[in-house]
Image 1 (tube, rainbow, N blue to C red):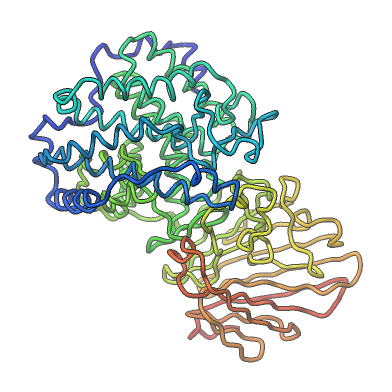
Image 2: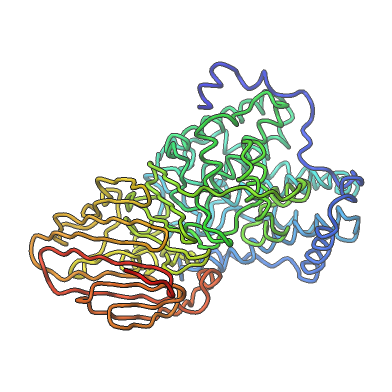
Length: 606
């Protein structure tokens, strides 16, 4: 898409001659004095909270903890705290609390002094021939690696300089010169001179959110520091051609296989790139009418389940933080009132933007992008994304979401054919979702983690055999039904499971969810159906009562209920307390047909 455009219209000819103003500087008192009172109060609270705590040390032994113990937080804790404190201190300065300038200077200097801006978990570049983490436990200071957070660090320092240039220069111009030196050395020069970073798409083609997320921040750094037009044009041209490689592996339906929670870093980062292009060319370079762009930017609207819940297949939180301002902006650019309305509802606080990973640019956009008036807009009643094979159906106050796909997706869980059911906007039959990342998460031990295994998704196990990881383990003969999905799951299991066919159909009526499995095996074996429930179930005969639903299962199945205490802090933000795993097991047989119905607890079901 972008490459074809650039062949017709080189970007240099479109760039404005004017200096870009990405954010109002602290000297623009009218802009800063007119921000909403709620934001002014939050800036003061947040700034004073961080002012009471010093910048922590970022120790080599904390960096080493990733290869020694598998801990990411040992390094990431002080790493992100430093950046949050710098953002908060810079905002206090912009509110004319001049004493905070020393905290800003200290933050800039200690970050510029870091041996690496990448985090310990990203210290190796996963390309053929690269060293293993065990062989490179500390960063090579002579070879800066551009990972997600080094690029984001460049963005933060660039915007702090944009906000406070005059005040920093009044102390000494050496501060701005140091920022420029480090961003050039660690970000801009490696970006232009190396083709080896895996997310660029030269050495690997399996790209993910890393590509747009990093590029959006590199582009911002370039727009701030590359004042020579040819240099800026060359970097933007290179960045757009890399974005094309990511678009090539992104489905045409715009679905994000990493889940809605990763839209911030994937589709939302693409939006940041498009906005920067529009600003740098004064509106001469826009792509808002491209169908694939529109599909990518509107994906969260299709994945929303209501009440802050989203479809959370793969490594996605059930209640993810989504940048509401970015969704609102996308809706405005696309002329999509439903998307803009969802963004309005999810705008949130300034702290939301930096409490996970400190996305300072998003905080500033929220600060200066007026919310406007809330407008009611209808949510899509049915969604079918044929590339992602995601189906969402809403009927009678219930929402069914189910998927096909394969088990080699980015941030994959072994979940082909799994489903979720929400009633009146609340989870009943669930996907447990994500946990805090450790060294195991993206290693050969990933599928030892219970939350990514098929045995902890709403799927059948054949004589104890569960689905296997890998792109070859996929759904076949996938059919979008009027109110659901039908697919053959046999290909998602290893041959040892002995499955000839496993046809699953899922449909939602006005009163109930109907699940039907037809399983043909090469030899008799028991089948166990797993159901992951949000609420403690009670069992009466062949009926489960759980929360607000009644689940009726075949009378010949044996029922076993297991409580799963949620001990992981990330999962507990979505599902505090316990989850409940129900196993329904039948006698060995070569052919099994099982029908399950789920309706409201107080409903009369046939």
